[in-house]
Amino acid sequence: MNKIILFGRGLSKFYGEGEALVSREAISFFGGVDPYSGKITDISHHLRGHSVKGKILVFPHGKGSTVGAYTLYQMSKLGTAPAGIINIIADHVTIVGCILSNIPLIDDFTLNPIDVISNGDYVRVDGRRGVVEIVQRKLKGNFS
Amino acid sequence: MFLNRNQELMLKGEFGPAVQKAMELLVALGDAIGAEKLIPIKSVHISGISYSTIGNAGLSFVEDFASLGARATVLSTINPAGMDLIRWREMGVKEDFHSKQLRIINSFKRMNIKTTCTCTPYLVGNKPERGSHVSWAESSAVVYGNSILNIKTNRESGPSTIASAITGLTPLAGYHLDENRKPSVYVKLIGVKVASNLTASILGYLIGREMNRGIPAIIGLNVKNLSILKSLSAGLATSGGLAMFTLIEEKGNVQDAPTMKIDYNDINHLLMDYPLIEKPDLIFFGCPHLSLPEITYIVNLLRGRRLKKGMEMWLFTSRHVYSECLRRGYVEVVYNAGGKFICDTCPVVMPTYLIKGRKFITNSSKAAFYLSSKHEASVSLLDIKTCIKEFTERKI
Image (cartoon, rainbow over all chains, first blue to last red; front, side, top):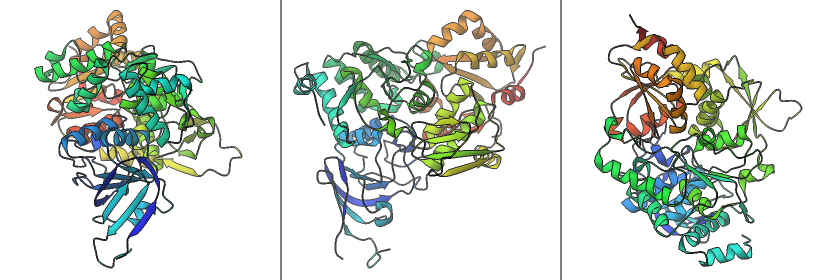
């Protein structure tokens, strides 16, 4: 397949790549993700039980606790952090968490990344240039 | 982002490594969110205090700042810790947790930050005058501050508030700008009466969940009771990324913003997510921390009654409000009814080993969400009056 490239706003200027985990719902890192396992624990979340470790995590924006920045920082020290984060519009808690933890963060795309990126796609996130590359689709020929 | 001469020097390290590190974080944040400059602030409220919430990574972060010689330059207060700083042993907190928690608290003391340990800074003296720019974390306090106190803050994070305490600055963006403080959605209530903290808390949770972002203007909600508005703020902040709401009498001529409707069934549906559990063992009020009027209300309901067998009651408040309760004899009434006050902390941020498996009854949607998601506790939602009626009996 041809690469699909999305242009956004690089908020945390690092680089990461990995398989995408796409959340339609907002995420509270504090209370909603277990920093020791990397698993989503939020009882109201459709991805409860999935791990964000090493993933390119795609979600609309943060919600809930302002402690989430520390949770991301903790996860980066424990090796359970996502490899990159893609938001529709990022919030301060996620931005500060990513900056402290060397996690690339991009938001503000012309296309909605949640519609374009699917679970399991292989994605590169370049926070310095604000560029997201979808290099491989999980299912061949599935562009929906 | 534009920096003035003094701020340039701060960033270069002329005022020491702590100020430099704080400036680096604020400049990175400011650049990311498109702030044109940094502005001075009147006060700071810091989240991420409990060792249970920030772990070793957070402990080092805070301790490093203190060791670099960081000092607060504006009035700064902190959120609840993971234990009552005095009666931690009685709570069952382990030595290891206690020593790490103390290291965090002592780091803040060294930084000249007031160790208030409460999520209600506005009830313990951190209440800047209307219109002030501040840097607050603690999502419920952010919403209460922007909406009720009319101060201006973004939904700051734990680390960014420490940076603001040290520099006295925050990036000029978001809710600091008046053009971003206008309602984006109108909320129409159909048959919803908000007479208790519980209903307010659920209403907030529902609006936050539907909207996720933006500012709701709630039409016709004529609530003046500050404790109920505190519960509404906490609910709004939990389920979404909201930082502010407004109450208006009627929508008027505004046509451009969408309207959301919430009726009584919506409230009931959320209540059914937390149905009455069998044999609950713990009543918990104080998320956010109880105000004096709330405690007066609880105490008056408890007089002459005691908890039924097998039930505990924990009331959470700030040490500041607790002192006043002691003076008024409220602590004795609660104790005689079989309940107790716990200060400086709350179950959301206490160590999981004290919470897991407990069967809670509370009146806070925020507490219900975090207790079940973070601590795997079971939770029922009930209002204060019903709860006390149901789980206490008249003393003989």
